[in-house]
Length: 173
Image (cartoon, rainbow, N blue to C red; front, side, top):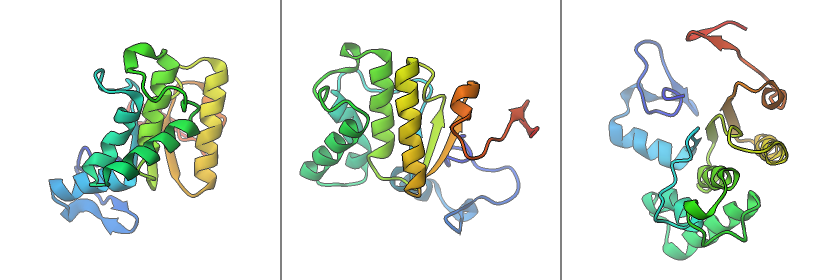
């Protein structure tokens, strides 16, 4: 996931993203690419505890230089999309684990990425919320967003159009 998200560089071979060879990109170019084209959903929510849900979701837009008024409306829209339109002003400590994960998903979606990298996005969610999140991921994929999702849960993997099994760093099927 770190390699796909441009957090690490390949030790050999090429990494082409949207037809662009990333080997020649410097750290600033890769940071811009991550911010503008890749959304991350981490296993740990990585929310800033002093910020509200809407402020956490606005962060990628701040770094992208989006004007404040537009940032807020996009963040509200992303939170509504994951069913948290009524929790805009809540801080992470005021949200359940499932709600915190949905804030993290909204943050990944707010910049309208071409690629979403999701590491165990349903790990902290109840069955109903997991189903809703996977339905959202499926909808996003149908809209042309590539979703790469890591999971140990067969019922979550069953939502994928394609599965790749990895064991000890090697593709096994």
